[in-house]
Length: 111
Length: 114
Image (cartoon, rainbow over all chains, first blue to last red; front, side, top):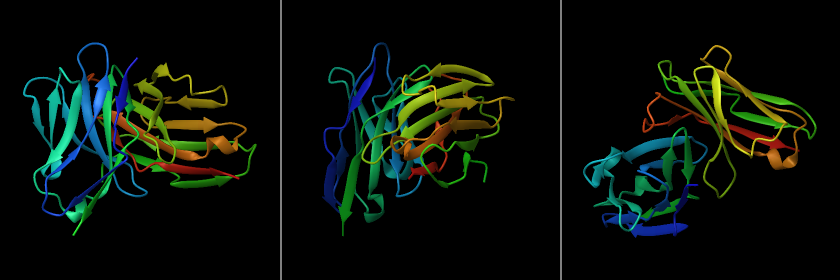
């Protein structure tokens, strides 16, 4: 069985400050890990993924994520937050066909 | 726009009625997935297809739910005898056939059962 935990329901940061959205996972075998963002009444938009290789993955809109195998974590980061980054963020782990998602973290960036 | 499309975007129905949703994947993708999302939770896997073959079904998918992908292109998800607990956003995604290939999601169909 595979699982994902996003320990924070809500993250608040000021515009221009760095942001981190946390994710830990459990899966047998090598993990395929993903981050998605969801805006109100919209589907999920892909941000980035980790398959293998470099532990720091760069993605869309200036986001990056750091894979840490020993801590089974895949935290999403951005050096300087924008108000437009405010949204709901989901971490997911993939095994064969299906993805298992966390319950999401609402990011609010205040001006 | 060549992304994943879903119809209808919204569906309101009365308890006990049948509903059918349609998903059109990205044209070159041979995998298609259905997820269900309720308020405050992440998407939950329902089922997926590779071409026309349904490869996996979640235990969440009761016998009132059926999905098809008859020609390996679009897919339909039917819910028979709807219940209020079926109210949710139903999301469709597609990908190429690699195990780590990115799933691209459609906008979803919001179902409300009265």
